[in-house]
Image (tube, rainbow, N blue to C red; front, side, top):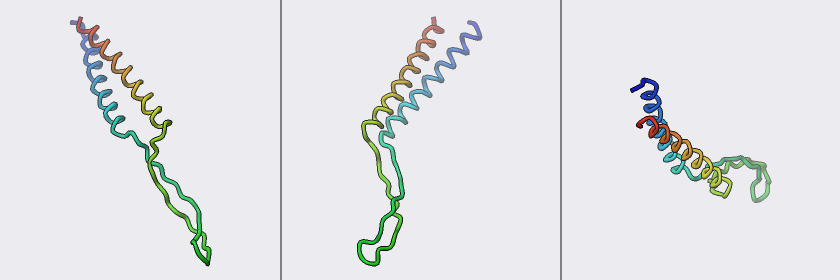
Length: 90
């Protein structure tokens, strides 16, 4: 067996494992947390300006599209690595 082929095979196996881990992490964090500071005042006299810290999660269509696209890229990378692996096995 050629040393280069063995190296490609090992690299492909490692790439598959890394990609599967990244896909699992990506699926685990479907929502994105955002934070901001807004200005407001007290509800009654004296109206004193204050800053309010707000935070929440975004799970809109933009985030879902981004996650699906990243997932698709990782799946394509995994498929290419599996092709390399099968080529080197032959």
